Image (cartoon, rainbow, N blue to C red; front, side, top):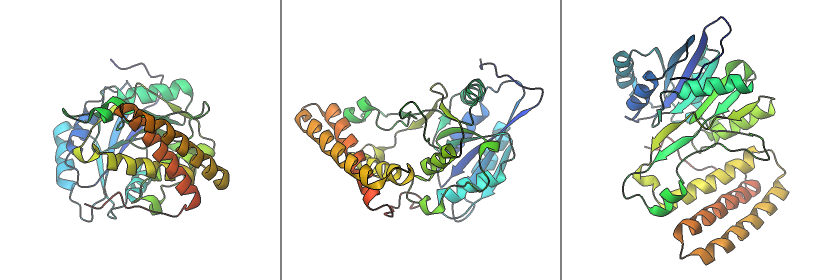
Length: 305
């Protein structure tokens, strides 16, 4: 049963933005959106932005929309650049609220209701929820024990400074004119955290709703130390280049934290989950230092298949 959402004598419209690039799992994502238990007076439309060179998702998403009786708008945004697809969703949006979900995730039936209820209760302009990883049988214990592949929004000094587009709700009127996802980050990653940093600095009130969950299967190629280290390093770089903090002090502090984490990790070698937690924390801080020292480094993490 959905939580009650206070309405003000008008329809609350939500555009769910779904960017896709050659992922057949998008069909399951759309099915989960069709199962949303919407509060009375809430109307949902799905905007699918196909980021492939050719409109390869057209057939599968339109068929899914028919099967599940979904209101859907399809946009072809060819570039192999996730920022281009996200911006195409922003340009196509007309609703009061925009929600973002990834094309390999599935939303709980009360996902959207929880986000909207939280936004109303908190007077928020943006709400972030967790993306919970589902680990396959046989996943390395040190990964599943630490839940390394889940994406949970967090606070810094009691404030929500940024978030991720894997699970987000934004009041469309709170997005400043001209604020868009940066295309120069659209293949390296970090474009969403940078966008939300700027949204927060514009004065938007951002909060977290821990009960608005989506799930994502942990794919085999991510169940490796190398992949996790690469991601943590990239996350550190994104933080350094987006947070707006002074680079010299940030680099010095991050290097000190890196050394501390590795000093803690080494004696824990016989306890892999704890050692891995501290080692990857150290890799994150190393990424922060690298991003502060060389902010223009770019990796290619999107649109390569």
